[in-house]
Image 1 (tube, rainbow, N blue to C red):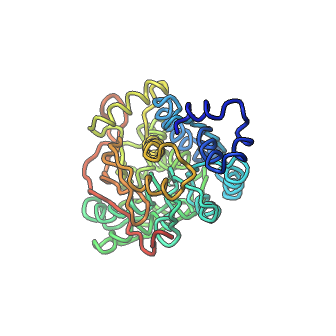
Image 2: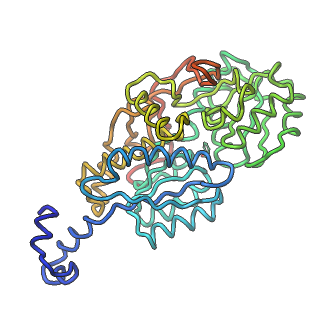
Image 3: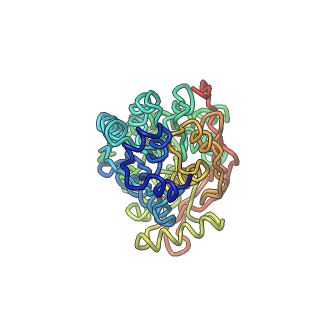
Length: 404
Ligand code: BEZ
């Protein structure tokens, strides 16, 4: 029975009264005509605030394209700032699930917050589409039938870079990242291929997340004798690290490489020429030559006053596409969660990064490519120019047995 017919059929009776009289199917059908509530847990303040902003902007771009409606139901975003604090992120997650009763949850950016949210999401059977946080464990021993990831596992942009840096840059490398799970995951992934390729880790250093003065760490890098650095920093950490690396005079003698977040378009304008020549691994650059990306870059820049989309925006775009496509496939039915999980698993489309698909083994995105990119001044500004690529990068998924 479609919505109009049902409304006529119920006449003036309240839905509750009709439900009592006619059986639970009426209540089920009625509930499905309300808005689809999507809970968003992202940082809108702190070191990663710009990441949260890019993800949100791209999601809103895609939902606006659909008139904020899918399968006849309105789309409602309920946004919460996790303030980059795991206890806050967990509290906001509980509020969205228990009080707001969201149909789908998305976010977060910070790996530690994702790990904190994991059990609440899993035990309440809430569908979570991770739009950034890369914690490897979520595609491995802590995977869940209810959790999908449109962004990356921390392993994905870094594992191919170990071999590449050893063969093309240097075999004497200093590793540095913020001292939390994402930093550790990424450096371990780099080592996985760097050491077998003959590379030597000269030293490793893990400043606190949100460090503003890297001078003591840069002194250690200078004294280490390393010929290159492999770094993961993002948001304001990336701005400070890349600028201070240059101001310290290290750029002349030590090649800076890293995970792509180090020089994404969210931080490039603030880094300026300090970022020139930095080499990073990432699944996206706005320079990718495909029709979906051309359209995405144009629409995003038109809507957001010339702002260049970054990888985080691509993740937001893909998160919204996954949600829309899966909801269309189940006709807007968010109550049969098994069916919705099934539909999400099967979603496939042309994303700005290339062909998007989930690995059914882990529910993590398979990266069509990890690009090795170099920051160059081209097309009127600083851009991450692809110089090499590795195809079909899937997280190994060790220890994940879905459905879990
Ligand atoms: C993370 O915490 O997983 C993360 C944060 C920023 C960029 C990439 C990964």
